[in-house]
Image (cartoon, rainbow, N blue to C red):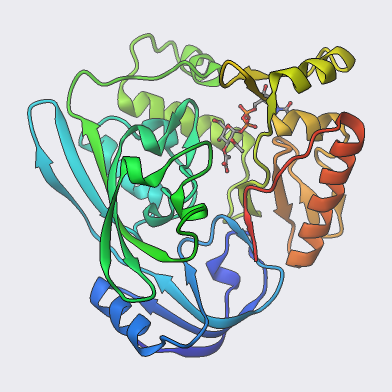
Length: 337
Ligand code: EPU
């Protein structure tokens, strides 16, 4: 375990932003992580997973601890279900493919989401009608302050739309080291309710899709809409879809009858932020090296040498314009550092 100084984080954030860490260390086991935390009690620390959900707007004047814990295994099974455990530093998509190749069902709709397994519970990642809370059993986390290990059950995680206890009540207090999911071995609950998936399967004349078919359909949809961070720096959806009270939404809807929306509860609706941004004329626009993706307006991109500040400023411009036109506040989904 070597602590490096003035370390470039360009290859450690999917936006590809040039920023440096005052100190940087990669840990490969829980024991190494404990040691580093113990030895650096009074130093400022910054925990880095896959770097796929953050915008670096400045250098990090702290010890950056990169969670590089690897390993995945079956920990238990019965006739119907299997419990799989993945260490936090495993790449999410590779983990999903590993489960699908063994015919374990539950994660297929979340194929090709960037990032590592350990950060998936933090914002309860989701796509195409599925969220990780649907298969999540528990995760193990280490308390930064005293290095004690704690298991968080699904209940304790308080999952919501892109929300969890790790973004709220225990924010910055724990580092997730591994996650357990309960997946199906048979009678898979194939979920093709999301319109895009049905269309994609239809194109290939697939009537009774397998897990692999659903995963392939999701991969094809994502590849057609979302830029690959290896080719064009980005952090997936930059904004969350706003949730509005139905009473407020109804007034806005009278003015903008073509506005799309989805019911989320008796009293609330979700409005696609991508639609609002597109209507406001931002889709595909470019400001220097910072821009809004041409196929999915929720995604901000770095065409090369954009700084975090430049991307942040575009995001603020979008927020202000949306508020001015629609009276709706859209909130960033990525962590602005
Ligand atoms: N839309 C537009 N213009 C756009 C983008 C979207 O009008 O540029 C409209 C679409 O026509 C559609 C609606 O918005 O009616 C929803 O679009 P889409 O199915 O692409 O989903 P989204 O709400 O924009 C969310 C997630 C994505 C996830 C997709 C699919 C959030 C913040 N984003 O996007 O997640 O892949 O659903 O489930 O909830 C991510 O979090 O990084 C991410 C990519």
